[in-house]
Each structure stands twice: as structure tokens, then as C-alpha cells.
Length: 299
Image (cartoon, rainbow, N blue to C red; front, side, top):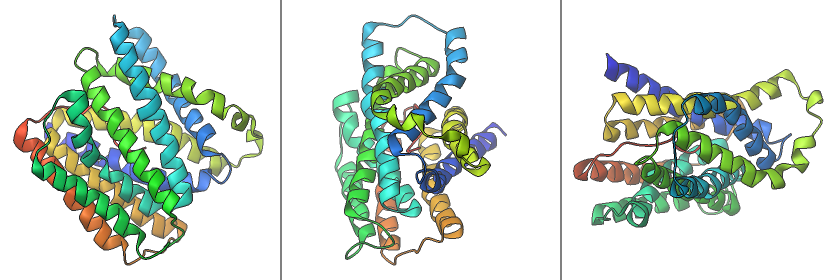
């Protein structure tokens, strides 16, 4: 029964993140990417702060430095690149390309965690990168631009950095410390760049737009993060990683049904290549030394 609950939690978390790409396409018409990320982080901190303060434990200067690196470059920059990439492309391509993050985790695990990269893992990375290029097709399709694809690839790489640094940080700290301080450092890192956008006339926003902000700020971050971390306490890491594929599926379906996006024929071979790359990466990781996953994927 616990395995089933874990599977449901992981599937729901990935589905929530898939929906972020559709919701953000609408919200970004009114709020610029950087202020939207700042709002998302502020809402997350409002929920995490009481939990962290009630369970606070001692930490070293090294712990805070790792949280600073993870929060600014991994968390904050990744979310900004994700929103810009989604604004410059489409919901289904955004969710698809950022699902390639596990392949980049393999490579970044070498310098950060001291893990060895094997030939199958390099093949997985090559397949994921090729898939991202194929998605573009011969020229821009469905409102997609090269800068959008590059921003989404950057989001996948920086999220991979966030993940591997957090795995290292989790060796000495619990998830409460990791989640709170990475979000806090990301928020204060982005605040100077977001200040101008934070004075928008929010009173004129419709109830539907506010629901979108709440979805991005609370449901897709705080709730989905909890579901994802809970799921990995009930399901082996290699099995849990497969639920990442729910994210692009939900993003694609909602992009078509809600936004009326057009699916280019190049989406399918690109999706196959990315899926193969991620599957090979996950299978190789399971065959060597399974490890716990800290923090969610993109969104």
C-alpha cells in the first residue's frame, strides 16, 4: 500500500509540474518572468519558514555556501530560464525539453559528487541533446524560437546543478534546511532584478489570474515538492525517476486542449530521443548505486 501511495504522490507531483508550462504561458502575459519567479519563491518561503524555524538545527559555513550555490545558480536562474524559455516557445516543448535534466545530472555528478561517468551515460546525454535539437525541426515551429530552446536547455542544466548540489548538501543537512535556504538565497538573489515588476497594479488582476499565481507559487512548488520527496521515501529512486515522463505528457496534452497549440511532426522523434536518453540514464544509475533524490525536477 505504501508503494502505491508513493507512486500516486510522484505521478501527481510530475503532473502538477507539467501544468506549470500551460499556466505560466497565461500568467507571463501580465507578469514578467523574473518578478514571477520572485513571487513564486516568496510564497514558498511563507510556507517553509515556520516549518524550518520549528525544526532548525546547527549548520556549518560550508552548508550555507552550498545552499547559496544551489539557490542562486541552480534554483533561481533555472526558474527564470524556464519561464523565459516557455514564453519564447510553447507549453509542450517547454515541458519536453526540461525533462532532459536527468541526463545532465549524470555529467554534473562527476565533479560535485565524485561519481564516474560510464559510456551508456554519455550516450544518454547525447540522445537528450539530439532530441532537443530535433524538436525544433527545419526552422521555427509552433511559435518556437532557437532562443526559447536554448533557454529551456539552460533551465535543464541549472536544475541538474541544483539537484546534485542538494544531494551533496543532504549528506549533512535535512530536507527542511535544504529547501528553505535554497529558496531564500534564490529569492534575495533575484529581488533586485524583480523589484520593478513587483509594483504592478495587482489589484486589477482577474480572479483567474490570481489562481494562476497561486498555482505557480504554492501548488507547483510547495505542494509538489512535498509530494515528490514523500514519494521517494516510498518508491525506489530508479522507479520513481520514471514518473518524470508524466510531466511532458501533461504539458503536451494541456498545451493542445487549453492553449490550442499546434503539435509539429518533429515533436515526436524529438520526444523519443529525449525519452531514450533519460531512460538509459536512469537505468544506468540504478545498475550502479541507487541514491536518494533531493528536491523536485523543472517547476
